[in-house]
Image (cartoon, rainbow, N blue to C red; front, side, top):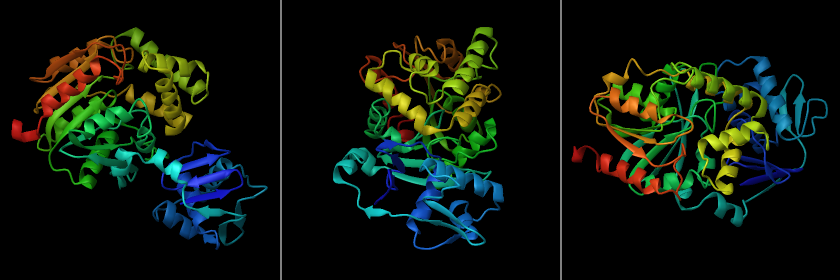
Length: 401
């Protein structure tokens, strides 16, 4: 179903808001609010109904409601004075006003948004221990692999990404893949108060229970590695294999190297001043660090992902959090088979971080990948090596161990 009003199009199936044909970044809760008001536009929605539908009945302040209404208006080019689309009915609630054209999504758009793997992907939501809503997806078939969330993820956008789509298609050929958006970005809640390390571990716990996983392999990439280490150390009965790729034990703001700490602070400065702005210094620095050998299409996809996945404020908060992750107290307690993979010339996490992980995890295997990219790309010689090692290591699960 697609709703059209003014220059806006709302597509619930893909959770997209288009303004003048271009995707408009919008927080998941704000998207839900717009969708609810549009869908129920024939009547006035009371504040209590709004709280029940959008906040799950939790206690919400008037200022929080006002902030979300304001954000919804801004996303669809409305404001509190004009109230062209979202009208405040004093003493009663809110109503979506104005002409809405409701109809099915065009077939061509459906074909683009739902290719084979996306059509088989199931997206659902669960609540972490502190109430934060976490979005997760299940796809593929075979032995279950849970991929830990990391900085900059978007479950739906990934399925169209020339960087990430091939990656997940390759995993789906061999495994039942469960992945989720980290708190603060993607389809998970953006309005988050706590970005401490233990909360990220609790997010895994919530996804494991919601997805019904009993025993599985755990894949921690980049900032997902220390979270995966902590979970594997705490729940060895659940984790059959631990795979760490491009990861680290301590974030760069905690490591001994002054140059790495300076780099971390520089990235935070670039985020605060250049997030989501085409042509900004941050865009160039970001892409050159993560995929220096990427094609223009792949680099542009990372730019889009940056813009769609979270707000500038959350990007800085998440970046500061992951650069302070510390799994050093638990890395030596990992008691499951572990495989550590790392690119030789990784510009995001130095090779030494991968070596250190492999040395500190009892019995871990180490594989060095011949690449400069933090995210191995499908055109690289290292691509078949990466997946060949993962498939060899996990195999059919416990049956091969």
